[in-house]
Image 1 (spheres, helix red, strand yellow):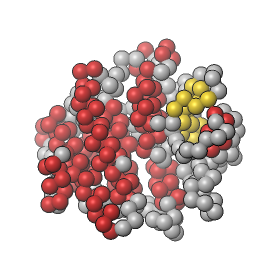
Image 2 (tube, helix red, strand yellow):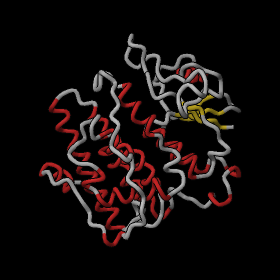
Image 3 (cartoon, rainbow, N blue to C red):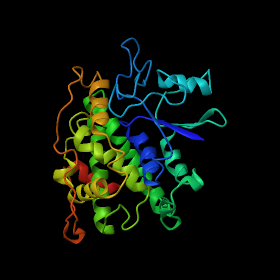
Length: 309
């Protein structure tokens, strides 16, 4: 039996948890969920790492470690390998039969999980194929630059330690957002590649659902917002969040906001969590995609980067 351990705050862990929901496994595959903060004890950055609550009532939607009763996530890593020297990251998939870690790589789990549970997947969810053969080349091509410029681009921007590094890294984020805005519009929605939900929607959603709520202010990604500057992306986000089961259910804004604002002491030393924007995702509505016009951030540097992609 495979048992996932995760953090609801992490966009990369969100990918795997979202697949769990989309494949109808949330009622069958139980998960252990770490608290969103703190990550360190002040003696060493990042140490002792993510921790589980003492009880399921300590922090909303965080759970005790249902595998071993661990206090810290690193204890699970050490059970698989007492000499482990890597990062104690989420998501983590544990194999109870072989008593070891299967994977802690979100992109790998995103590709592998949909077919990993066989007959446990409800009949009405078995046909969902997030990596359809006829779209694989497009999924692979877009995944590369989305990961580079959007999924990790917000982190390269937010954790920049100089003005030069910040200025360099923020431009690709919005150049890529400009591009994906046009792609979704060109494909006619409601998904990135048109009428079929794919991995790309999951990869993109985990970042975009956090964008206005966290990355605009906390990571200084404020050349524009999804709800103001990208009407197509905003419609795409609202549809997934409000109308497609699994997206809203796997999104926890308390975990998301408090993780970033209360565990990045160098960025937000007073650990004050902003209340907005309100609502976290604008209300859902049926959208006439033919009437939407693609938006963009028109800063010359952003347009120049977009043109080179």
